[in-house]
Length: 155
Image (tube, rainbow, N blue to C red; front, side, top):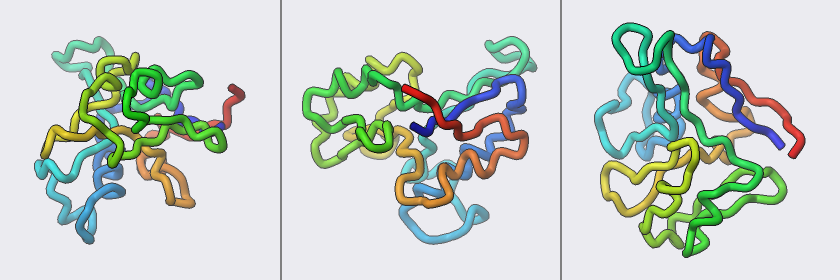
């Protein structure tokens, strides 16, 4: 199963991965240069937290990504069945049509990655591993420091 792996010590907080994620999931056509970074419709599926200069995380930044856990607590907490683990890929998939907006998944994610969407607060936003993109996750391809990468893991 493929997973996004993080090497925290390499992350410099540039947020190229964040912009790449927003670009990959935007609803309107365009380039990264006309991407509305403050538009609630353009939302990244991960976060970069902390800072080495006055931040609450000593020594640098920490990318917070969905781990697509072997036993996903988010899917276990989902009462509507909107979250489920795909047995073929191992990725936790989200079905927006089934979501009841109870946000139990948000509360149960041990990594704090799942969040309500900013525009409607009626669905969740989580990593989908850039499903449908044959080149893999856009965030990984756009990290200049190679702090995040895809790795095959045995579950």
